[in-house]
Length: 496
Image (cartoon, rainbow, N blue to C red):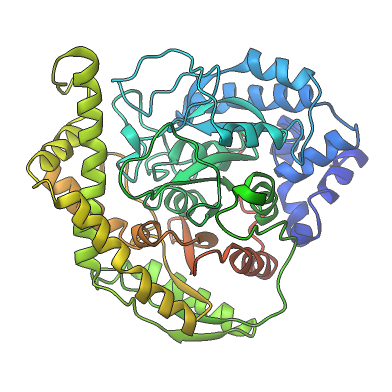
């Protein structure tokens, strides 16, 4: 039975989720923690109205983490006392007092930075990036860091540094990667949303696997979060969330503005747009292969939904050679592995072995070592050569609808870093070749949690826009959220 206070807090979920708000308050969840089912915007509203304190929100989230994480393995470091001290002080911004996690691929002051690797020491970082400042300016209270595969290389979260991170929808399945810890933590209800990053699909893949909303922003939209970037800048920062409004509000709070802006700012997108869109779509991946039948049906259903909402939906192929693009994208990945080997050798004077770096990372670095010196510049030139045909495609359509993955998810172990390199690479290429080309082009894309498999696993629908098109994506996401409200759809492990 709902108390008046709980009813009030359900109302705070807002008009975008009104139809599903009651479904969020399942008795088992409400009894365990009255904040667990509220999105970040609703939690921030409670603090702003002085109905709760930031400390209460933080302590409740800590209790949920301590209860849930032993089952899921989503958290790799905890900064509870640092978080409590921050919550007790003055906070401003749109998310003042809301609990948050940072993905263990960027540094955050006071927390260890290990990038999912045994190579890096378990010591607190002192580095503060501009992106960390923007996160704090938004009022968020960081409780710890979330799990990632080693250096974010694999689309699952099973580093040898710790036990595999599991999917709250089914513990035998992967939550995706590389933001798998973030997605598992949010999908299980530990925190309302969490930082994620995307260098080849790493926001969209775990969002799809865990039934969350995941927006990858345009290149240059956000501040740089890392100390250095090698080659083409393909990675961007944002979050995974339950609600569209949390993602939209965080983007408005953290995007670069003024003289610092590489693109015209998006600003706060607060609801659906009125303009009807021309939406291209296809179901085959970059290699021309068809996805799993359930994924194909899900995308076809999404296309029909868009048509029912008044949008024009037209079949649209990709305007470039996918196999060639992926061959050059592999060079970028390999350069990252080679950089890790070089860093270890510079620090120790020794080459790392498989007690330091994972077999996949070592093999990827070995692949890089066998490339000619011109391979990296040639890869960058080729990937940038696709910008013009991609731009031309988005002159004919507003958005492109495709799958995120060829399957809803994969079993734990299927993409483990100990699988022989060639076999693992082939498995990755048959699983996640819908997402890297947007990183190469620097354009925005999102995974929208519209569907489920017969086994109950989430299936995301991916929409891609031209450069700087986040507003169009978010406006459509609000519309889809209203039409197929997923706000009340929760993983079986949600809240415990």
